[in-house]
Amino acid sequence: MKIRALLAASLVAFVAAGCGGGSDEETPPAGGAAGAQELFTQNCANCHVLAAAGAKGQVGPNLDQLRPGPDLLKAQITNGGGAMPAFGGKLSAEQIQQISDYVAENAGKG
Image 1 (tube, rainbow, N blue to C red):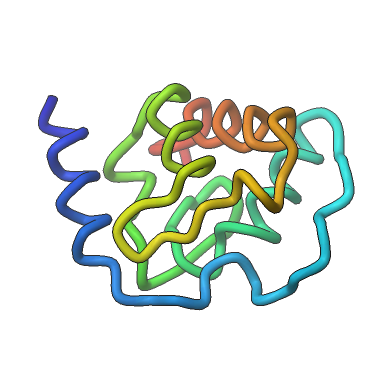
Image 2 (cartoon, one colour; image 1 turned 135 degrees about the horizontal axis):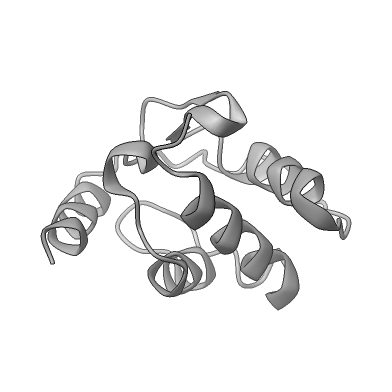
């Protein structure tokens, strides 16, 4: 419960508008762990910390500290919130699931 409260508070405090790399092009589908890491790097690393992906973003919540579960991640990535943009219109449901699973499995392990 503390993680969800911290995530919610962090998202409200979000101050960046440029998450996701700034490209309007749709990210191509990718597969496997390497594909999931690539999707994370292309769409999330500018804002978030996740050591397993070498991401050192300074704007969004530190995912290594929060260690959110895949369901919370999936909802946040799809719908956005705070200053985080929604990726539901940019990424496929499969890509969002890949990122959610990748972060949930790797947060705090870097």
